[in-house]
Length: 249
Ligand SMILES: [Zn+2]
Image (tube, rainbow, N blue to C red; front, side, top):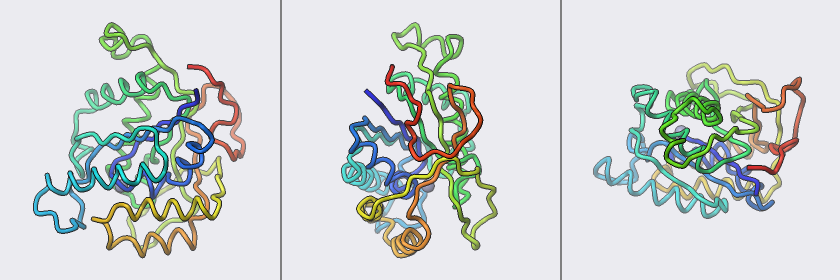
C-alpha cells in the first residue's frame, strides 16, 4: 500500500498548498493522510466565533469537510497553539510527529518549506522543521527509543518534499523559496476541487476571492522541492511524487 503523509500548520493549508496533489494520489489509490498541527484559533478572520475555542471547533469541522472533498483517507488536527509554533518545545513536538510517522509509515511525506511558504508565516516554517526532523529520526533506532519499546518500529520515509512556488507575493514579507524539482500540472477538475476545498473553510471567506484569483492566474500547477531521498542521486525534474518509490513498508 502506497501512503502519502502531509504535515501542515493551519486548517486551509491542506487545500491551499496541497489540494490538487492530495486528490490526485487519493484517486490513484494511494492512502493519504493530513496532519495539521494547530486548529487555527489565532486567525484574523473569525467567522463570527466569540472565542478561540469556538473558532477551533468551527475550523476543525471546516478541515474535515475539505479533507472529505479531497478524498483524504485520514485528516487529523492536533492541538498546538496557532501563531506560537516557534515557542513550542522542539524535542517534544518532534517526538510527537516522529511517533505519527512511525504509525502511518508513509513512503512519501510533503510539508511546507522552511521559508514559511509564499505567505512567510512562522508556523509554516516551524511545521517544516518539525516534520523534517520527524522524517529523519523516525527511521533511526537510537531516536525516541521509548516509542520502539512501546511497539512502534523505525520507519524511513523514501522521499520528503517541501511545497514551493514559482512566484512570490509582492505585498508580503520577503521569502527565498526552495527550487522546484517536481511539477504537477493540475487538470481543470483538480483546480476546481482545490478551490472548492479551500471554500470549505467558510470562516476564512474574506480570503476566498484573493485565493481563487491567484490560483486561476498563477496556480495551475502544484510544485515541490525534493528535500531528501532515500536513494542518493543528482536532482532531476520530476512529475510524480512517487517516481522511484518502492511499495514497501
Ligand atoms: Zn497556514
